[in-house]
Structures are given as C-alpha cells and as structure tokens.
Length: 318
Image 1 (cartoon, rainbow, N blue to C red):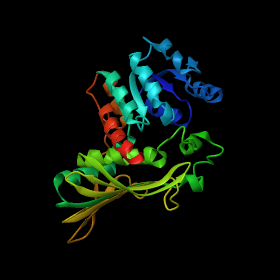
Image 2: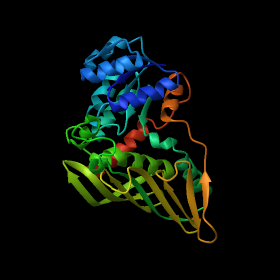
Image 3: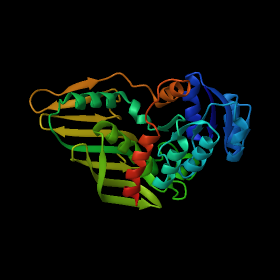
Image 4: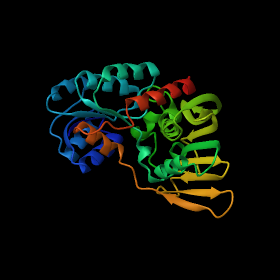
C-alpha cells in the first residue's frame, strides 16, 4: 500500500511508524507547518510534500490511501477531498465535528475503504471483556460504567500545552469543539456500541469547561436498556491515561483498567474468588486498514461506526 500522511505533527509521526512497520510505503506528506513537514520528510525519507491540502490531486495514480492526522475541525475537508479524488481514507477519531459533516462523507464514500481510528478496539483486555459478555458469565446486566481519564491538562505529563501545539489544539474550541468528550468520549462511545450493540443518550450529569470541555459525565442506556455512566477528563490527577470499564451483572462483575493491565480483566463472581481473564490482541486498526486496501475483507471500525458515534456526540455536545 502506498500512503500519504496529511498532518505531520505528533499523530502523523505516530501513524507513520505504525504503517511503516506493516510494510507501507510513504509516498507523500501534506502539512502547512514548514518545520513539521520538513522534519517528517527527513525522518521518513518522504521525497514529495506540500504545504496545502489542495495539492493532494498531484498524488492521483501514485498513491492508494490517505491518512488524515489533522485536528478534528479539518477532518471533513480533508476526507471529503480525498474521497473525491478516489483515495481510500484512514481518519483519526472522531470522524467530524458535526453529524451533517459525517453524513456528507458517508454519501461520498460509496465502496471506497474508509476507517476511523478507534484504536482502543485492539486492546486485549477489551477482547476479554467482549468474550465474557458474549458467554453470559455475568448473568443479567444491571449497570455499566465507562471512563477515559487523563491528567495532562493539569499535570503536563506529556508536555506543556502552551508550548506544544499537539496538546494545545485540544483546548481550543476552533479546533476541538467537543473537548474531552469528542476526544476521549468518542473512544468510549465506540466501545459501548461494540460491546452492547446500541447506545442512547439520556442526560448530562456534570460538565467542566475551560474554553472546551475538560471534564464530562453523562448518563446513557446501552444494550437492552442497561443504565450506563460515561466519564471522561483531561484533568484527573489520579490517572495519566486510563481507560476503564465496569459491568455489573446479577452473577458477577467485570472490571478493566488499562493503566493496571491492558491484557486482562478481573471478574468478581458473587460467590467464590476473583479471577483474571485474558485474550489475544485483536488486529490493530492499522493492520485492518492495510489488508482492506490491499484487497482484503472490509474492516471495522468503518465509516458507519464513525457515523454512529458522531450521532451520539451531536446529542451530548449540543
């Protein structure tokens, strides 16, 4: 597969490494930031790069796919142009900043491979949780808690947002209208849809805003009308980067915390000792996309998954 990276900052660099490890050839790059673009091309031996997105047409016939690594506000423009030019698309989450934009992409995509990078699907512990739920081990499901908690807005654990734009843009409404809910909450919504098949928004319970949402908690119903509390934060001092899931059933409870163990979940039966359950790691989103573009089976999370999450975000963000 021959790939163009659009957005050569932190996420573009991260994705480049992932794709190169899979044997993908980087044939081009686009970024308006001269320093980012130059460093990226030097690091990954990319010989052709442009500052403006409207130069994407130059790669027609010489590349198979585009990876959109831009801030959320530019996903729609980037992906729509890529689709119009006939490229397969790998887009960072969330899909767009509005449901209307997402629907426009859906109409433009036809049968072109299009994946949304809900990368948490490839966590082995999540696969273990999925297996336990499918087996009915927990009994009738009573309630669900889903959390994605980070600390960087306060702790600067990955860098000072005032000094590093890869973090600063997440705190700017013009780049990230949904704040932590669009950024972290989109992962949670995707996982809830994956595990329970459906989700509906009930109400916002609390929200803390500092230009954008930095903390959010809301109530949903998942699956067969199961109550669910969703929480996400950029400013939780307890966890640098923690994806957590708790599912309570009539016979047992499962807990997942990726900061403690990414490979296994804990199951607490109503009677008897707790025990760990693991599972093999599912294919990564990068692996799935490459196989799809190279002529393999269509993969997920796809455009439809992104559209489903976008619909929920639209209700929750307002």
